Structures are given as C-alpha cells and as structure tokens.
Image (tube, rainbow, N blue to C red; front, top):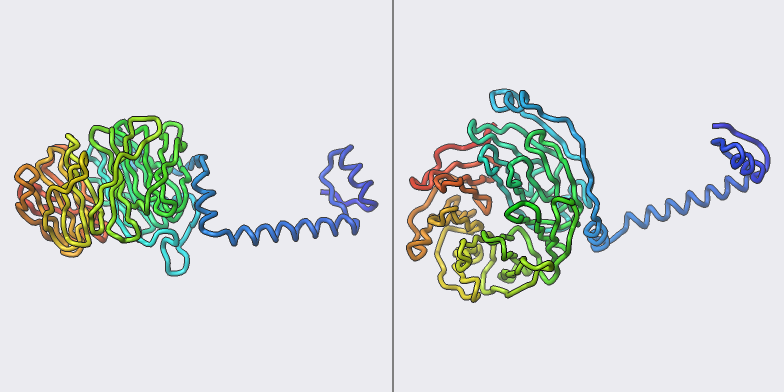
Amino acid sequence: MSFISGTHGQLCHRARIQREPVTCTCSSWLSAKADATKQRETVQVKNTRMTRRVILSITALAALALPVTMASANADTLKKSTSESALIHRTVVSFGAYTSSVGDMRDPVVDATNNSLAVSPDERFAVATNSGSDHLSVIHIKSGLKIAEIKGYVSPRNILFAPDSQTFTVSDSARGVVDKISINSFSVVNRLPLGAGVFGTAQSIDGKLLYANNAASNTVTVVDQIANRPKTVLTGFSEPRQGIKLAPTGDKLYVTNFDGGKGGRITVLDVTTEEPQALKQIEGFDGVRGLSVNRDGDRLYAASSGNDKIYVVNPKTGETVDMVDVGDQPYGAALSPDETVLLSGNKGSNSLTVIDPKNDNAVVGTVTGLNAPRQAISFSKDSKTAWVLNEDLTVAEVDVEDREVTRTLGKR
C-alpha cells in the first residue's frame, strides 16, 4: 500500500485512474474516516443491545443453511473406535443466537431441562444428550461403547435419525439452530437457523419434512429437509417444548403446549394439506410431557408429571378415557412398535412403569435400576428391547419381557 501527499482530490483522482490501493493523509480525509469509524462503533454498540425478541425474530427468519466441513472419520477409524481405543472428538462451528451460556444460565431463552435419545433405524448406533451438556454422545450398540463425542453445543434438545440411518438432526435452543450430522464422519453437513428457542422435533415418515417446536416464539416451523429451508411457520401455540409427535399414519401432528406450567394442552393438526390446520385442543392435563399415538389414531398416551399419571385420550373426540397411576414424576410415555407395551419414564422414582394397552391399560410391572429416566426411551423394531437414557448419558438396555436392565451402554 502506497502513501501519497497532496490534496484529497488528487489522491482520489489517482486512485480512480490507476486503481492503486492508496491511503490519503490529508486532514479532511482523516477526519471523515474518524467520523465513519465512530459511526460504525455506535452501530456495533446498538447491535449488542438488541433485545431477545429481536434476536428471535432475526434468527427465526434466517432461511439459509450453513454447511460445515470437518475432518472425516473413515471406516478404519470407526472400526477402531468400537474397540478399546480413545474416543473420537468433533467440535461444531461456533455459530448461533447464543454460542455459550450467559452467566449462570445455560439457556437464556428457555428455562427448562430435558434429555434426548435416538437409535438409528438399523439399530447400530445411539446418540444421546441432555440440555445441560455441551456435547452429544455416540454409542455403538453392539459393543456397548461410547465411540464419539460431538462438542460445541450449548443447550441441545432433541435428536432424530433419518430413515436411512446415515444422518441425524439435533436442535439447540440456545444457539437457535438445527444441525444435520453424518453418522460416518460425526460432522455437521447442514446447519439451519430456526431461531433461539427451537426445541422438540418430529419428521415425516419419508424424512423429507421436519417439524420444529419453538418454545420462545410459540411457533412450529415446517422445514423442507431436501431443500434445507423453512416452508412455513405455524402460530397459535403456547411454549411448545419437547413434546411433538407425528401420527404413525403421517396425517396428524400432536404438539404439547406447556402454557406457563398451567397444566398444558395438546394441539392436534392436520398436516395433509399444504398449510397444516389446527383441528382441536386436548386439555385437562397436569404438566403434560411425553406422548405417543397408536396406529389406529384412536388412542393417545400422555405423561402428566404434575399428578403422576398417564392420560389415555381418544384424540378423535378429545375425551380422556382412562388415567393410569405410575411412578413419581412421569415424563415419558413410549409405545412399543407392536403396541403391546407402554413405558412410563419416571424421573423421580428412577424407574419405568410397564403398562399393557391391550389389557385395559393395566400396570403389569416396574423396571428399576435406572437413573432419572425421562422422555428418552426407544424400542427395537421387534419390541423386545428398550433403550432408556440415564441422567449421566449412559443408556440402559432393557429386556421388555423380563422387565429388567440387562446391560448399560456408553460407560466409557
């Protein structure tokens, strides 16, 4: 860069003619530059004072994806990691509404704790996290070993595997993003900003659409996962958190509303139309949490942590047809694929209550030896095994018929 004496006009004329990278030293130009710098600093200060609502609006409307390239774990590395070797570590790009905790608040947007567990459809891997953790744990199910940690999250909320088992998504309410991560490289392949407060997620049977709750903006965003962009934002909810479930037939969406702790309600939506439409509100719960729906669409099971019950509801009419007493602080209500077993994850009593939906919702047993189980419960395709997330991010493998924990995965 060259420095030239003379008037500002001469300098600008030379810069235009010769297109040289020059710096003017005249007093008028320096004064103008100082004013411009001061203006930029003022704008920056104002930007740092944006309210939470403005941050939510900006990030929610950001419809661009941020692809992230990270080091790959090849087949040899993955094979080695399932033996006694060291963990594979990955760290995601620091990007989002809040990229770290604020003071003593891990999530300055949503004051809630939860956990999440997803098992790949091919039943090879499990991915687990909770909102108080800065990482995801990847577990190889056959060996029972934790093989990787994916770090860099602030308040991870919900994990879902794609139907082909090759990728999974994770929402982070503090960062305000949903990441798609490769199970082969443990790296982010797409990042979608959906706004601080993004929480529970559900996806269509073919994996093309993602439905994402936002507890801060009281919305559900419908995402086209092929184009990696939002399609529409649905309003009219009240603090939709982790509870969101698509019917097995794919035609109805059930969204829990925390309602400021007033008991909660479930919104039923028809998602067969281009613009999903709310059909009804199901009310009468006392702290509604996890939920499941049967294939016929005539039974919905919802955990109610306020009164230690599982509500059995006919979602077609909205009528509660039964209430089942379970353990202390039930958060989970997981229905097996063959619909013969319902498991209630009882956080307060460190247990699962086993319910038989085919026998008048009778309680047929209890599984003990767990550590604060919540909503994070997954079944094998044959319904013989259940995987339940413990508070320390280990996974209890449960023999459903014998109602006992047979081993604990992810201890390493």
